[in-house]
Length: 484
Image (tube, rainbow, N blue to C red):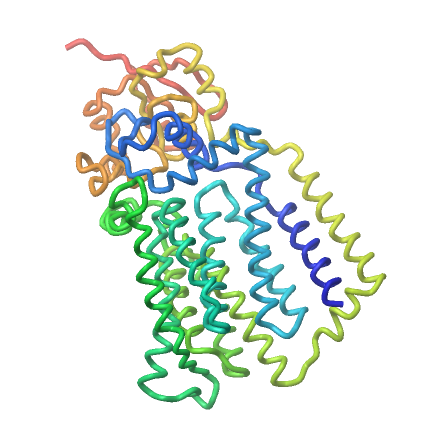
């Protein structure tokens, strides 16, 4: 029975991950490929080679860039798409493993795993965050396993994860240490108050002396910050990012909209209700509070909220069913594992997969509405593209980079802030939309503009901007300098 359930769950996870993984790539993918190629050919010199500005660059996810370039070299966009699916399957499998280890009910384990799959699908993109999610889940598993069984192999795993993370995605390396804090805080409170339960026995407090070793491990995990080719970036990146102004404009750094906040509020209410009906561990409360605060303040943390909060919700739900002696598996898993249940499940999964493949049949990996595919072809065939000084928009700058066209700006937002480049706040100038000042200050020779952007509305009325190329979505101008 156990083996059959795991096999069926694995098939369901793989089917859902394949069906839900997005096809279209987004802007960070393109510069990631190009930086990986650059590193393999020239090493890491802490200098940007892709904009017109000659700026210093921190290479914040250099190892991921190299890996993605190697995958791209093997099979292009198809290989990257497959690697995304593999990462997605890995993430969901780890969530399933954690749920399975910590819950009595197989139905709750599978149901919350599928829910996590649905909610995380939109985050399956070729970005370093996809590997970071795997590392964070493994970290949480290693910590909880060590506190349960004291196996020191988990501590070695924690060190290795820290080493990987500060080379794969240095921007989120500080969060690696935040995950330790709920367990440390629970231990401190247990020592101070000498209680194992509070709030009408609804909140459990564990005084696990292994936490002291965990604290030492956390401090040792700082050492990998010195074992990178990007100098002091692991220790300075987050601070410089927070000081910069890019987070005030980029959608993923902004707070969720009203509907997002309502959904978060509903989940928060559900956690409170489940805790009152059953029981919750103190470190889980700290984790919920911390991640809820992060999620309410920034869209980019919503994925972490799902990764950590939904396994906690699964555990709380399982506690409630156990308390009231409700055997939900009797009415669900029991029938799922029958021959008829397996046949019905197989038909449903086949339908989901076929529907997904059919709906994606005409979708390109790179959208011509978002990225200037044909305009770039024109530029490369008709202009001295490596030496022009082109003004482009933020969202497709990385596609120009992939095609060896020097950019004014791209989605490496931090690079263009003064905190990182120590020269100009190019990002702030770009966001000001003061196009005449920008064009004059940076001696720009060409402009590429998307027709659904303010830049196009400005350029189409300027007489000395000569149209070189135009299609349904983009236009390329040459800036004709007026004689004085």
